Each structure stands twice: as structure tokens, then as C-alpha cells.
Amino acid sequence: MIISEQYRSKNKDALVQEQPYNILYKHSFGEVSRYFKGLHEHKLMGTICRNKEHHKNKQDILFLPPRADCPECMRELDEWVELQDMDIRIYTFTNMYFAGESFLDKLPLTLINIDVKGFDNSYSKLISILVTDEKGEINIDKKDVRIGMKIKPKFKDVPLEKVDASTLYFVPLEK
Ligand SMILES: [Zn+2]
Image (cartoon, rainbow, N blue to C red; front, side):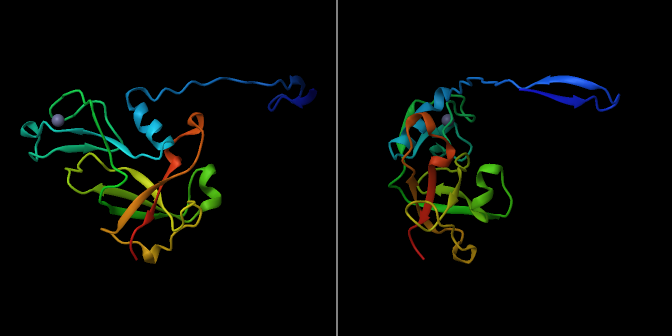
């Protein structure tokens, strides 16, 4: 298709062609690939460092989202843990009234940071959304959210090539 436009400043006709433009973008999840594969398998996976004698708080550190290396003892992390059945709580939360385009029709949303009991959670501040229903579509009323609330992870059924951070969401386990 050829359309005519005018130079913005010179008021002259310019030839403008419209052509399709496709680009294949390869996004590698690198050393945290196991986390995203886990979401596909309905598992919440984190990495853990048990080198506690070299940690500031002298505790095992959980990394969620996972990290490939421990920033406290500089060790490469090779231990993964499944967290979906553990005691998971809201560390803090915020109510979101504006968002990027893909979330605009879902506002207002409650974003949460989580803690997993039994670990040093200094580096495990996963951000996700809290909803009320198992399918992940009904937003929670902000008056029903509180710090320390017990929650559980849920996972959307999406093909591996579509998995991203929004595959995961949380629902309350208590009122
Ligand atoms: Zn460490």
C-alpha cells in the first residue's frame, strides 16, 4: 500500500510505503530456566544456599526468584527446592490502580511480596498477584488482605513456550 503523507515541516508530499516487519526475538532464561519450567509443571522452585556459616544472618538463604550465585558467600548455587507445599505468607502488599497494557483490564490488582517460612528470606521477595479464585481471574478485595496471611501458589495452564512471570499467582489459604 502506498499512501501520501506530507513532510511535517516542509509541507511537501513524501512517498511512504507500508511493509510488514517481523522479528524473531529469542529470550533465554539462562540459569534460572528451571524456575520457568517449574511454573509449567505447577511447581514453585527456588534456589537455596546452605553455606550458612558464611552468611550475615548465619541461616540458609532462599532465593526466590532464584539466583544462580549466592551474593553473600559467592558460591555457585546448585540446590533447587520445591516450595509450593511449604508455609508461604504475605510479607507485604500493595494495591495497584494503574499498570502496563496487558494488565489494564484487570485493575485494581493486589501485588504481594512473599516469605517462605524456615529460610532467611532476605533475597526471596517474589512479586506476584493475589486473587480469590482458583482460575486466577477474580481480584481480591483489598480489605481481605493482610500481612502474614497464609497463601498458596497457583499456576495457569500454558504451553512451555508461553510461560512467563504471569503464569504464577496466589490465592489465600485463610480468611
Ligand atoms: Zn551463600
